[in-house]
Image 1 (spheres, rainbow, N blue to C red):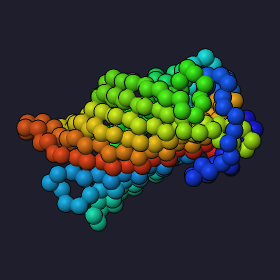
Image 2: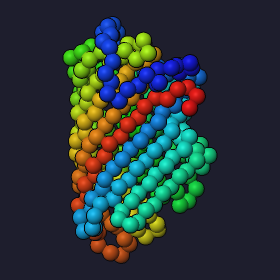
Image 3: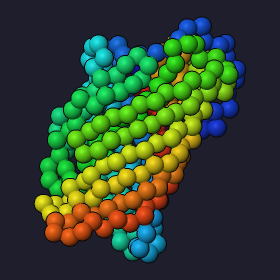
Image 4: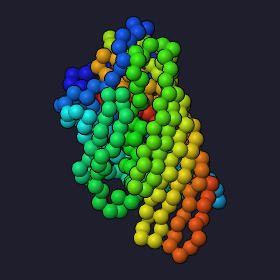
Length: 274
């Protein structure tokens, strides 16, 4: 949102003063011409049965949302850094935003439900390597808001599912407003979340090999929402998913292996000119 200075006051501990309770149902600001910049950092530890040790993955990105009118928004990466380490093996992908031609086109409801209408076009081999990252990027980016004011003690539940060409994602989340707060003089709400997740996705590695991943598990987190501006200021999440990763090689029987993924994720709003 033009001119906002809220991000510089964000504190991970969220130990801020009390504020008056909200008087009306919350909604995300979607004014045409508004542009929001977010920083996202995700860390994950992945263990696969039959493989020694574990893999450590990190993803860091700067993401821009630009509202164009109605429910429509454009989104793009200012850059994406994906790194993976397994024992002595180390892989790194640093991709400038210019490599992601076209960006995302999203439909965003006032309560934060997001549908991806278009994803970026990547040059090979990045299209295969990042397919599983991009396809889910905005499915659960924004917390879903209730249709009642965000007052301490208010609880609500939301369930959602998305069917995609190569998979499916499901989520059921319980939300609870734990307190009011103030960020840069603006009233906000602190909300805790508990989610049950399930996802299935198939990634094509090459013409003969594909990987099918099926995971489910739980996630806990909290977010801070500025009431009058209608902005997500910060979101923190951690969770554990488990299931199977199955190698599908043409001419061979499927090879399933047990997979466990533990992760943390932080999204925070940046000043208008990052």
